[in-house]
Image 1: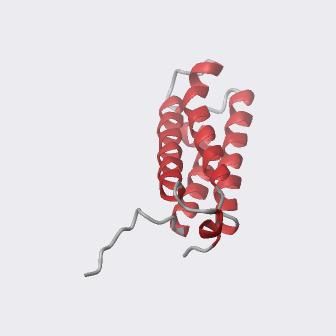
Image 2: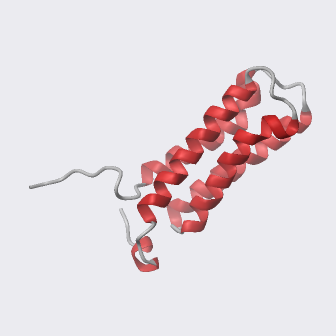
Image 3: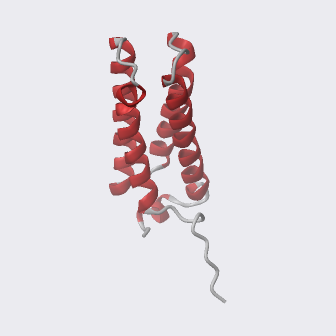
Length: 125
């Protein structure tokens, strides 16, 4: 009997999804139409680039630390509207939704890789 378990093994599509989320994060101030604060724009671009970097690194060298950093980036994106005081307007919804997507993706990847040894992390589809 063949059992399909699409979410039990870390796949490359998850890394590409993380890269796409990072690009959306970096572009979110323009997509939300809130480009009035340069600080918010630069912090958002930095968060998006960090997500792209950590998700992209997983394509070449899978380690648990990359997923942990993705989790941190997602949590920061969720908290940043409240910490930085731009919790008004549509950008907060973009950041909470995109941050939650990054957190869920990172949690899924951490769960998939949790019991794997370092050797098994290297060998994957």
